[in-house]
Length: 119
Image (cartoon, rainbow, N blue to C red):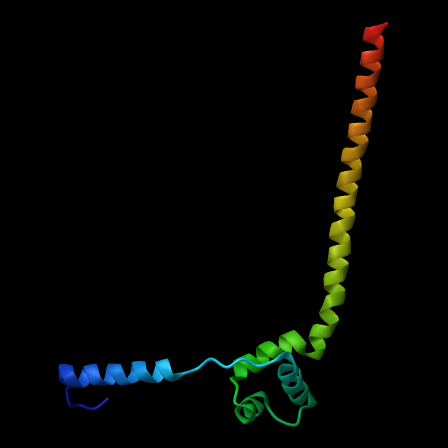
């Protein structure tokens, strides 16, 4: 920043120019195929993440996120997710089975009381 103090008008112009620059930025969307290809290039090891991101015109943060989603390490994760889901479903089945057994016993007891009362 220069040692010269800016007037209110100069400051307003600077702020307005910065706002116009921000408004001109357009958010770009990339399809899944582009993302997968970018991750393949990254995992090939020929270029660094920063260099590849510059070449593709994307941020290195986006490239890292795509790597987590579509990279070779991401392909291994669904097996862990599947195992966790199976374990969860088994626990739920056990709970529902216990509830069913309790209801069966309750109905049997209620059925016995009704037959004794009618005799």
